[in-house]
Structure formats: C-alpha cells, structure tokens
Image (cartoon, rainbow, N blue to C red; front, side, top):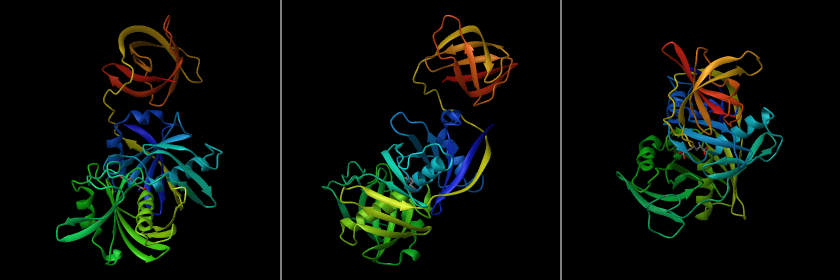
Amino acid sequence: MIEISFTKMHGLGNDFILINCIEQPEIINLELEDLSKTLCHRRFGIGADQILLLCPSEIADFKMKIYNADGSEVEMCGNGIRCLAKYIWDRGLSKKDILEIETLAGIIKPERAGDMVKVDMGEPILEPEKIPVAIESPPPIIDYPLQIEEKNFKITCISMGNPHAVIFLNEEVSDFPVSTYGPLIERHPIFPNKTNVEFVNVQSRTRLSMRVWERGSGETMACGTGASAVGVAAMLKGLTERNISINLLGGDLLIHWHANNHVYMTGPAVEVFQGIVHYSAAYRKDRRRHPRRSCSIAIEFSEKGKSRSIPCTCIDISESGMGITSDYELEIGQIISFKIKDVQHPKSAVVIWSKKDQCQYRAGLMFI
Ligand SMILES: N[C@@H](CCC[C@H](N)C(=O)O)C(=O)O
C-alpha cells in the first residue's frame, strides 16, 4: 500500500486527478493504466474522467501524461492542460506566463488570460491516415456517411492530437441519446484507435452547442480538444466565423481558429480539493532502459539529512539504478546517499519500491 498525494481539478466539469510526479517520482513506476482505472472509479475510487501526471521534461517546461478512466493513455487533453497550467502557476513552479508542455501530441502552450487560461492547441490534423480514420479520400473528411443501426450520420473527422468525429444534428442535442450512439461510433471499425464523438447544434454564426462522448471515459461535461475539433469542423463547413463560443454541459469555451492555422481555446480551470489516497500498487513489468547486472556488494547508505550509516547489500545494478537488501525498511520516495567502492555511479537515489522479503527488506533505487 502506498500513499499518493493528489489534487482534484476540473475544467467545466470535465474532472481530473492531478498527481505531481516531480514530487513523487516513484508514481511513474506504477502500472499507470491500473492506477487510472482505480482512482477514476466514481464509487470505489476518487472519481474522475482522467488522471493527469505532471512530470519533468527534457524538451519543454514540463510534461503531461494523460490516462482516461478506462486506463487508456491519450495524446492530449484540452481541459486538462488548463488545469495543469493553473496548478503550476498557483504553486509557483514556473514564473512564465506562457508555458510549454510536452504531450504525446507535441508541445502545447497554455497562457495566462486573466482568470482564464488560453491554450495554443496547435494545428488541426485533417489527413485521414493521421487522424486516424480508415477512409480513402483526400482531406478534409467532411460529412462522410456512417450508418449506425437505423440512423444515418454524417461525420467530419479531425485530430487535435487525438481523434474526433463531429456530427451536426438536425434534432435537439439536449435530447439526443448520446450514450446509445456515442459508444457505437467510438468503437466503429473505421477508427483504428477508436474516436471521441461530438454531437452539435448550430445556434448562430458565432455560437454552437455540443455534447461529447469521450473515448475511454464516456459522456463528460466538456472536452477541450473536442470543442476545438467542433470549431474547426463548423468553420470547414462554412457554418460559423473563425472566432466562436461553444456551449457544453459544463459551460462555455471560446474557440478561435486563427489565420496562422493554430486553434486557440480559452476557458476556466478550477482546483476543488487536495488529498492523499492509499493505493494498493501494482508495479510496471521490467521496462528498464538499462540492463541490470546481478552482484552482491556490501555498501552503506544514509538517509537524506541524517548522518547515521546503514549497512545493506547491493544485489543488482545498472546505469540508472540498483536493487538492495537491508535490515532497515526504506519508504517509497525517500532519498538516500551512498558510496560503492571502485564503482562509478551517482551518489544519491530515490526509493521507487520497497517490500518485506522474509526477514529482510528489499528496495529498488533510481539514481538521481
Ligand atoms: N477531456 C479531454 C480529452 C481527454 C482524452 C480523450 N478522452 C481521448 O481519449 O482522446 C479534453 O478536454 O480534451
């Protein structure tokens, strides 16, 4: 059982469990799919649509990893990145007004905009093979006919880093059976990576209303990438201007498809509460980048801020970490210092797992 500190946040009711993996680096070593499924569960967990992991990045200010409630890892989350930016600013983790956040969809830039957060969502992707959607037709895919049971839909396909199928309805979106057709379209074989599905009504040339069925999470109160895709779809079809507001179940987002081809999304981000969850951790199978050599070397370590030396045995070692056995129990996240005679290695490590093994303790350490 490990303790995980988290912050519950939402963007227009699309809710997130944000975990700071810079402060808790051991989290990255967990089975993250299991973690997301467990924590997002609305009855047995904390409850959320997605988990967001704040991580260090080598190419941007920070990295955001995102997992849906069903455990699937996703490329991008528009409401999530506004919440992540607010978390970073509120805790003084960066003084920059425009952040660069690495995601699986590339580097996305959230910017302070008064009480709101404006996000440069990048350029929409229209090529069918990149969305991806198995339709052999030149881009853009607009109003492609798709029959689902007795209903004939027309889908407009766009990727904002993640896939979206946008459907403009003649009937009222507020009464539409989103939870009947959403999952059938999400898993339709023409979407090899599944898809998010947006159902839309046009109110005027500057205002739309929509509901969204999110891939891997079900119907949510809002979706930032979804609203961006809907804005692009409406503009491609000539239904609206390039600067519009979109009403979702949780409130409004502003979408601007700029002449530079970037989509800008503006909306709120809210922190709800902080907490600590006790989690029965499953660890990732061995995905080490550096192979470990077995050994048996007696070493001593000391805990950060303490001078007492504690004996232990190093039982395997690689470029990035080592395994030890000791009579002393170490805690996950604890930082220790040590020295191994005649071996070149960093002098500090963080404990990424720890368990009792018969009458001794075993721990995995990552060099820092
Ligand atoms: N809620 C998000 C999108 C989250 C990911 C999505 N469910 C997917 O699987 O692509 C947003 O605000 O963009």
